[in-house]
Image 1 (tube, helix red, strand yellow):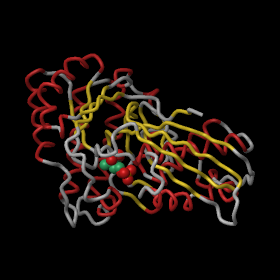
Image 2 (cartoon, protein in one colour; image 1 turned 180 degrees about the vertical axis):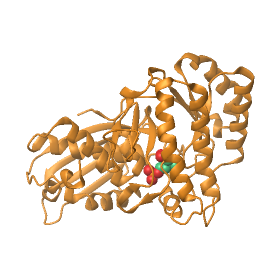
Image 3 (cartoon, protein in one colour; image 1 turned 135 degrees about the horizontal axis):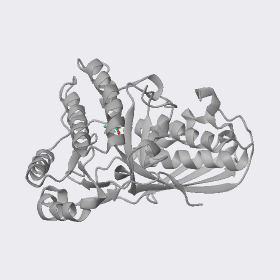
Image 4 (cartoon, protein in one colour; image 1 turned 90 degrees about the horizontal axis):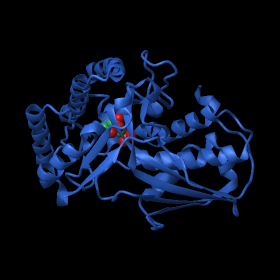
Length: 357
Ligand code: PMV
């Protein structure tokens, strides 16, 4: 599908309310660096989570004034600072939803995880909002294939936040053109779960909250800095190669190779932050403390526990369902001490965004 396919010129006026949940996701091969218009420099693959999600409802009413009204409420707060970002986002996507010009909209959004947890919320927030907008189009316009609506949700989510494109479907999503995956696209993510060994379908993810503070450098600045990073070309080549290696690992279920690739991707992303200009460091002392303990625990127990990181200091632990109890005991006994207020969240892979209303 090409960009033009996602332009909806249907000009209907209707009352209605739609409501969706959409989860966060954690990348295995990371997206770090983009071209114009949210086109990624390399393909990325992520696990779609299930227990950390945003719930968003959008109420549409025929507009009362010349300009449409957009009200945005976050956690019951009307003038939340996100509001301005959301209004700008909506005006930037109007060409894909002609009907937006005919409606006043009232958006209500909440996260089920504490917003001060440092967990990336843009992926869940943008994919939930996009699911609502596309669903309203589906309910009121000439019907197209279900694949069209899935792709459009991911396409619109991507324009809000690149990684959000991978939260629409799960448990495993790929975003970005890759020779390894037929049907892959830079415009939206595709569901690659069918091609993945079942051991990964119920993989577990525990998020260790190292520092709940707001990041000093946003990921959009981080992406931009990749344009000048001296290692960027090598990085994009390695990421592209890692997609094809991960495809083989997904087929074989070889956890040693999975662990090696996952951890090296996480450390590479952070090494790119260290080598950007201006450079920045998102890891905290306890991020490294936890990583070292995980490496040591793995050496001692031979259990396939590994870590990954997103653009922050929190550590995501990944492990198969079969060793869930043992690992969660290790987390509680040994690792929670390094978390802010001993806080961590057990999550697992899920199916992506889901309709509530
Ligand atoms: O979607 P953004 O712009 O917040 O970027 C996400 C970047 C990483 O989380 C570091 C990697 C990824 O692929 O999710």
